[in-house]
Amino acid sequence: MEKIVFEKNDIRTYVKNVIAEKIDKLKKFIEFTLDASRDIKKTPKYDSMREEMQEEIYQMQKQLGALNDLQRNMSRVLNNTTERVQIGSLVITNKARFYISVSLGEFFFEGDRFYAISPESPMAKKMMGMKSGDAFTLNNIHQEIVEVL
Image (cartoon, rainbow, N blue to C red; front, side):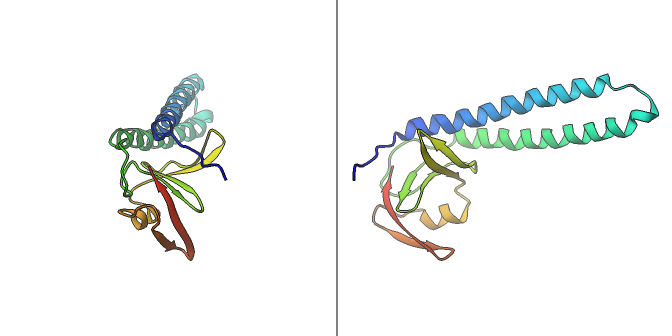
């Protein structure tokens, strides 16, 4: 079986771009919703609609704050290669590929499935400090670390 080579810097850049795109899209949607709420007639008949739109804008602003936190946290992620799992590591197990960075979840990069997970997640905490060849079990799923980049 041919060994697949992953370029961690490309994956890091991809994750940063995904976050930036989500922020940009959400900002545009907030602006669109704000513009639409301004266009609603100022009569009691439309008060409930305006209130719903304001609530929607509030929820989107909370999401935007969370995305900005992800972006800030991503800037702290190290990009150097190590033998042991730490923040910034790309961990290849016999079951999945984990990028220990921010809690972005599943993503596909060049046709391969990855999981961007927070260092605070149970999976990352279980793997921290481990190296290639180490094994662990989480939620009754046994995994072996094949490679740490």
